[in-house]
Image (cartoon, rainbow, N blue to C red; front, side, top):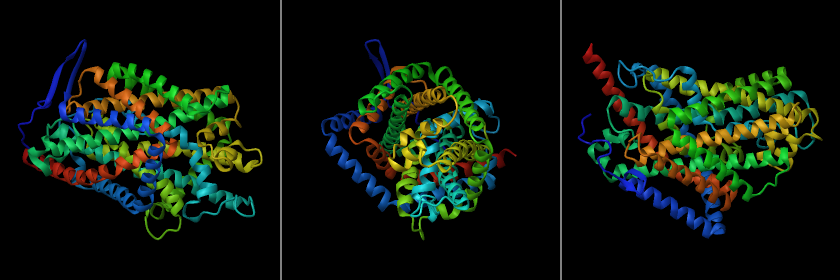
Amino acid sequence: MHTDYVVGQDNIEGHLGPIGFDIHNRVFVVSALASVIFIVLTLMFPERAGELFQSLVSFSTSTLDWYFMLLVDFFIVFCLALVVLPHGKVRLGGPDARPEHGYLSWFALLFTAGIGIALLFFSVLEPVYHANVSSPLGTPSPFGADGALDRSVISEATAMGLAGTFLHWGLHGWAVYAVMALALAIFTYNKGLPFSIRSVFFPILGDRVWGWWGHVIDILAVFSTLFGLATALGLGAKQANAGMNFVFGMEVNTMTQVIVIVLVTAVALVSVWRGLEGGVKRLSELNMGAAVVFFIFVLLAGPTLVALSGMWSGMTHYVTEFIPLSAPFGRDDDAYRQAWSVFYWAWWVSWAPFVGMFVARVSRGRTVREFVLCVLIVPSLFIFIWMGVFGSTALDQLYADPGVSLVKAYVIDNYRPELALFGMLNELPLTGLMSTLGIILALIFFVTSSDSGSLVIDTITAGGKIDAPRPQRMFWATVEGLIAIVLLIGGGLSALQAGVTATAIPFSLVMLLMCYSIIRGLNGELRRMRNVR
């Protein structure tokens, strides 16, 4: 592929006093102005914004449920096809490229960038909710009309509750990330194009991709990333606030959550200033280590054999029910599918530009086959083990004594999702200490998501440059925090969900076209490999 385009040729460079800047004038200006306008209008009209957000959620999850389900199913099939086809032997960066990060560091970067706060927020909430309320695929609930706690019913409900959770955090979501990351890696490392999402569409648009067609693609990617991150940051603030209330008695309200976002964003600014190696990578490795310690404690302090058995039964049910759970048609569980699965697929799509660019940036030197298999399987297995143990432990507590279970109180009776994790920790030793560690983990996930996203958005708005001035990264970290704040003020959880689904709809179309570009790009690499021989 030949183009005369030079990275940064449309950028504006200069200084505002001591602050330097190097921005793609159209992408940066449109993205920044639109973000500021959104923040101001939401703060001025919070009630009207809340109504709009709620209608967006309803439309996306009820009207377009079939579209999102089929979309993500297609991404899985596409990724698996790349593994078995000859395209899998293509190396990202060319035949002589070698990985820049060892497996352990690479997995840590993949994991903390791709999951973040959700690992803590949903690991107890989802299994308990799905086993007892939403009942995926009609699984009988132990808390049915007669309240019977038959052991076989409990076992089936637990397994299906975990299978439903694994569905949302396993292969489907990571296939979305793999498509985005693979496309960026091919056209940046193998084709020599700028590290920008627009580059992926060069086979379709040619040099027009450097004009307004490309501007629109990059602007969509910026907004998708901003709102996907804002959702995670908002959930993180709610859980951190709930944990502080649980441990220290701190009041739970929107103002406290705003303060949490402000403080954590300030820490993220420091990490962003230090860059990928000095900030994000070190925090990712620290977070991975702390998460492993946290996991081992829950496994050993809780009912270890029950947790491992529940995890295994959940995984087997996930495999056996994979196709029915993935299908959009012929089902009678609309409430479960629309409220959970469809929202998750939109959320994964909205996070795809951010995680995809980050994963591509740290994956040079891997073969396509190695890349796809590792991105699909390794994080999924880690999540299955984590959520299987946490979910099984919480469900065992609930079924042992439902009358006094805090998990039941927070998930089923009063629905306080941000307290679900702490309800489970309440039944284990060292409750205060481990709850505090849970809060710290949530805050570190918060920081790694924010600074990773800032690096990515800055790359997009700097015309593909990865070494733009640091103040630009700090600007975007600040904008992410502000959007999370205004979404919380403008409607809470429904506003966070609306931000995700609104940006995921147009960007999902971009991702479908991406698959065509990937095949074009890999076909060219295969021809080049044959000619070399």
